[in-house]
Image (cartoon, rainbow, N blue to C red; front, side, top):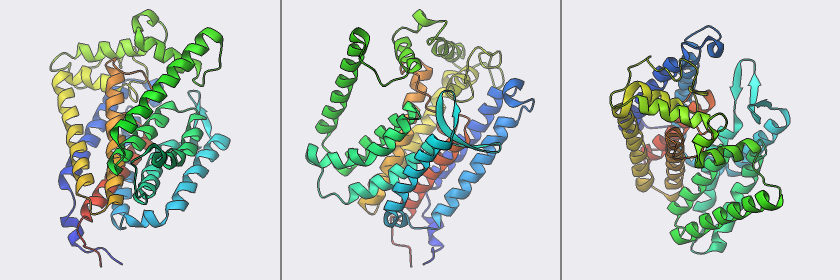
Length: 379
């Protein structure tokens, strides 16, 4: 079976253009955020920008590779993909390198690979197949199997611990359940129940010493979120510096390469978790508005693909990718401006990180695959 040349005519060129613009923006802002920090770059101001470009090239090659296959091939490889995901997550717990308190990385020479990032794609593909085989999701009982499906990989990721990625998986799950026909009131009850359990558990931990599953630094981040000024010298420091950076950009920003919060070392992780703050400082409110508009267009194209896919399986794949992008943007931007707790979730295509870049591009590749095959063009 080969791909007809008409496949190229059915590509979503608007989605491709938006993605390339976001990638280019990310490379520039990563260079701006890291160029004046020799301790970070090892004396090479282009180090991180070069890594972003290499990751983008690899990711684009993966997109091209994806386009040569009908997305239904992943449906037939359901079990292999699911167990490959588990194998990688177990392997990183056993043999991975601990970075910033989390055992989430494989290091092969200078190259770092984060299996939990790729777990998002594995989950989207396998959960789409699982849900597409369900006759109904009209009751709580019908939803149980979907939560069981995500349970094992979610637990393995929490053991690293990587709370941010675990939250992304849950967001993907809820987005795909909604698209598959689950009742919103059922999903709402589940969310409220989980929140209630966490609150009660936290209170029992605070007053009666009941063990709480979150690490001390994670609890500190949640506490600082409520009142960052109270913890200015501790857990609240990052978010205060981030909000300072965004606010100092005013309407038009200070200009490219003129950020002070990152260049002078006031804002930690300014090239990853807090890259939006650097962007806001340099490009101001107008730049932030245009960047968010780009994400809005990306998500709109993804939703269009989800609702115009030729079958439920394709629709669920697209819906999972959209859920991933939407959650990443909302949480990252939210924590940069102080309306979300700090969770370490990167900004798609903008934050420095090779695994994240490649996974985001694979997500775009899946969207393009579903869109281009909405009509029967294979023979």
